[in-house]
Amino acid sequence: MYKKLYPKIADALVEDGYIVIADALPDKLSQELKQFAINEKEFSRAGISSKSDLHLDDTRRLDKIHWLNEDGACQSEFLSFADGLREHLNCELYLGLSYYESHFAIYAEGDFYETHLDAFKNSKNRVITTVYYLNEEWIEDDGGELVVYDGEHNFVAKVKPDANTLIVFMSEKFPHEVLSTNKKRYSIAGWFRVDR
Image (cartoon, rainbow, N blue to C red; front, side, top):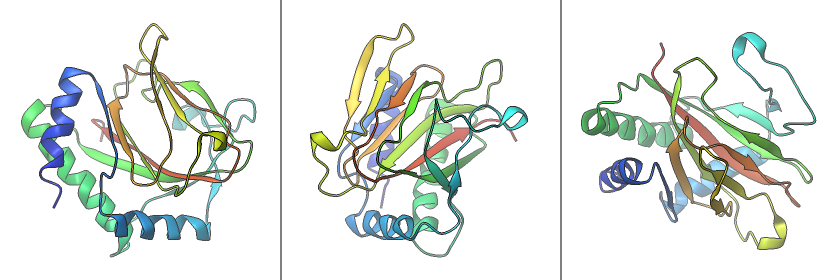
């Protein structure tokens, strides 16, 4: 189902280091994932830093998260898409990606995430980042955009968190931030990793 999408992503990662794709996955899947997130069961505040130094910091990040699991339904389908992409990227780009992890993220009104890199310093772990949006009828005044910068902190892209939009980028190359949102915002953030 997703095989036509995989080469497009791989080519863009080689050429530009990132890609933004509207209408990326089936609408039904996007809607089912949003419905799961709306229920907000077992979501908890997200921390910052690596596992050894994980802590909460209200001045840097305010969202709540829930890690995706194999559920035999929409989460499994999304993870299957990601695993197919992992296999394709390993085959075509020889990246040695060992697994994919991802979580739902909910930003309440006023929440944000300051500029950061997803790859932790001095640790080759997260290689490729994905963000998939679940918000229908999002307008500019709603805020909550993802702003991506290059290694010199020059502006690269501003991505509106529209439902079924997927952004994929190299984790070590692109600092990024989530601007303050003016209404509840839903997404799935994920990372292809090389550690075990």
